Length: 418
Image 1 (cartoon, rainbow, N blue to C red):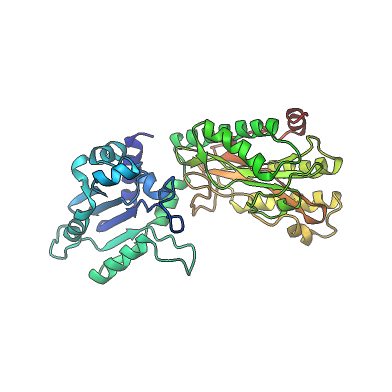
Image 2: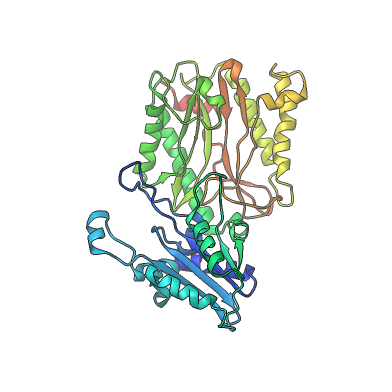
């Protein structure tokens, strides 16, 4: 991405705001391992990154829109030579300006932030008339500690009680839901490396190893390709695969079992998200083929619904409707109400800078990138199968960014030939 991309994103957000608004977005802080040093790589707040292209910690973006005009400022840590000796280079004003497209004159040091914000919010400055402050208020748990954005919102409430505090996330979710060509290219490239890494793994991993060893073969290839992981790899063999977010990856991979992978490389902070299920021995049994084929056909049924104007929930309903018949034929259910015993998650989520990208859209629209991931979990047989691809919604039929790579039984068995 270039600076123009981030400048345009800021402009599009500002156009959504009413006059008299100010926006605060924070890059975040590096987590600290228990009683130890900072953990890396630094996990930048993705909405902040979407508007700036900066992945340094402890940086604030402040944008204002008023009768006096619009402005964007960055507040960064002042480089410290002693810290640089220990932790490496620090973001400079020139680098921040180059990455973000914000003029260097508007890149200031953190100690200036309170003074500048006070000037923007001063009630005596009638030209500005700021009356609403937008922050990223993305609390995930009632009992989680206050986020830096929440703490800053509390300070604003205390010092400016007439200021209305609003959540900017719905606006950003709307923007991030529709991907631009540069973003689609990143997701596509990450998906290509994910598939290549899986092929590498299938040619190197062996029955009798541990799940984490198969995982390591995949992740080694991703690292050699110069990419990072979009999320923690799931490598679930046998009965472990009926747990959706199993990630211990510590059991022996036994001949005769299936092994389910849910994983993805990340390129430019854009994640792929792919699931595949393989026979540990290199050959599917007849029963495994039967259930694998059912899930593959459920994926096709869901994708048929992923078209502009169709309600998002219809893709999941298509999977359920398909399973009502297919699972009877597979001798798993005798009543339609039993489908939920074997399929207990949704078929799709938005994908982008976050693996589960925020979205408030209930109808498919061109430019959305979503997953398609039907699954089938048969605990009594020790079988869990999930197949997942990344789908681009277009003006017509959806474009599958992954395609049928490692979805055909014949290709899998040929590749795993021992």
